[in-house]
Length: 254
Image (cartoon, rainbow, N blue to C red; front, side):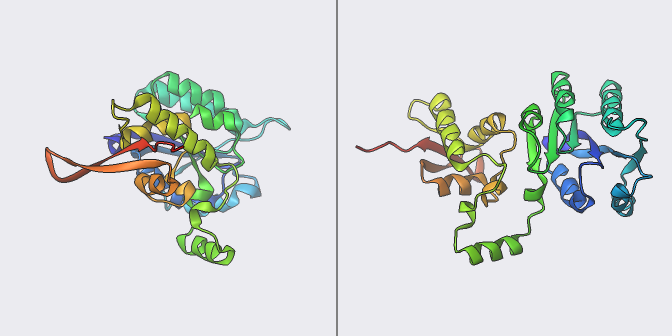
């Protein structure tokens, strides 16, 4: 089970705000257990000072990294070196790299080549190559969204929550096209595919995919809202009360 994964959490203090820490740790708990929890930065500089108050409360170990020369990011180098040390210790099943910096693209790729489960987290400004290098990627702004504030925004704009355009996130049109291709290429003879399988394949195509990006907490809710697919709930014979969802592409009528 995913919750049993041992995950090393490496945070770039130069690129991430401390306001996200609760949401970062909550999200990691959905994927596994954080074992290593380290944050890297030059703690003599005032721009990372806000982190100091939350480190003890979350049992995160700060790693001091001085900037030896101007224009060189020593923090990135320290994270990369330590990530490789952790990899070769064989003590973890995956990594969570928290940064909006494209410099970690090669690191994410290398860790996945070694069979590691790699989660990326960063702001919407994160370059696409780093997002694509991760197995899954979560936008910090989306994780931190307040349902109450979001509801106020929707009410003010007079639009449906799922219709609000969110910068940096895969468009709904691209999402629909991807789902249609997944269903077409992987369905049974009658055109149906298990919703869970479709969701897993969707994440592989779009590492930043998260139903919360589109205003829904569950995948079946999102699929229903798209109006492009038929959905069927089937009872699980070996699990009384259990239900599996299946979807198929709606036929286009002339």
